[in-house]
Each structure stands twice: as C-alpha cells, then as structure tokens.
Image: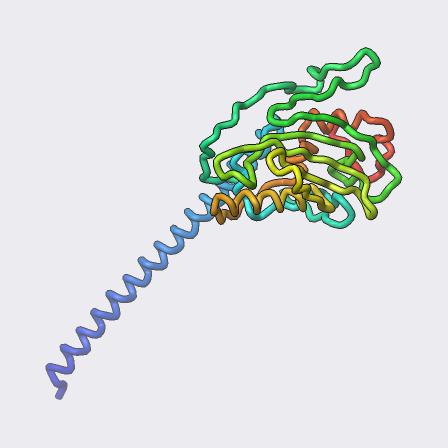
Length: 258
C-alpha cells in the first residue's frame, strides 16, 4: 500500500522540477535574446565609428578628443622599417580650453600654387597645417608602403591636447626625416620644445603622446587612433599632393588613390 505522505512528497518534487525546467527555459530564451541584442549593438557601434573615421578623414580634422585613446591602431601600412599590420575613438573628455575649428582647403582643386607651379605653403587643411611636402625616395626600402608615401622633409603642424597642461591644447610639429634604417618620424610639442619624440613609425611616436596626454588627465580609456591620420598622410588633399611629387610614380609598392 502506498504511503499518502510519500505520494504527496513526490507530487511536490514533480511540481518543483516542472517549475525549475520552465524557469530554465525562460532564462535560456532571455540569454539568447540578450546575446542577439548585444551583437546588434556592437555591430551598430562599429559602423558608427567607421563612418566617423571616414568623415574625419574627408574633412582632415581628427576628433580632438581622440587623445584619450590608449590602443593605437597600427595603421601605418608597413611604415618605417618594421611596423606593418593593417587595422583601421570615442572619449568622454571635454577640454576646458576649446579649439576653434578652421576650414581651410577642402579639395585638391582649391589648393593655391606659386607662379612656378609649386604648391603655396603653408597650406591650411582644417586642423592641419602643411609646412613641407618633402621629397619622395622611391628606391629606398621603407620610404613608402602600399597605403602611404613617407617623403623625407615632410612636415605638418596640428593642434592637440597638451602633455604638460591638462587644461590646454598645444601645437605639435610632425616630421619625417631620413634615418639610419628607414624613415624617422618625430613629434615636438610647442609647450615642451626640449622633448622631441622620435620613432620608427607615425603610430609609434603618437603612442607616446597619447599616453602622456592620458596620464596628465588621469584617464585610462582604451580606444584606437591611426598614426598616419594624425600625421595628415591619410588626408585626401595631402595624399593627392604627395602622389604628384617627383618620383612618386616610381614607388612600386604604393597603390595610388587617384
């Protein structure tokens, strides 16, 4: 004969198991929906960042607050002697000292020329001042890549967050010079003239600046910027002007964007 209490206990256990199974199914459904939503959100964020980057390149004005970036995109396209992985920056800092946006030249057709046909310099391209286009070295390894030309004597200036004053911006002079084992990239801030930063790639030297900018502002964000972009090498007008330099058409690796 079956014990009534035992039967009731079994019924209670069955009911508990049924409820737990139902709860488990609902939890799995919720997790799946959450995962799908997160993937859609991540995809949308990546698309937005790609569009923002493209927009900045077309305008020649990298977002001022990209200085918060800590992961630097190795976008140098085998620039210098060694760096070469191709990858392609949001931050929350609002500098107390605002920077006025400058317009300048927006297309290659607007570039002014001297009587001898040479480009009239310095050339204002948004936040970028082109001081010198330099000289293309087609036969020396490292002075061009598939994506960029690195002319010796190339020089630009741009406003960016200071590494010595958390409330200020300063002017950085970016140069490409001849090095012992390929092009040498350098940066010098107007408010720290004795601190010349030298490296084997545009990304390499801007990494130092970004870290310095973040440290003085006590920021620890992890975004990405492109060194060549901050050197102005990806700006459409700069790219077109460099492609028109003597010997540029002899750079075997470089793929013209014209």
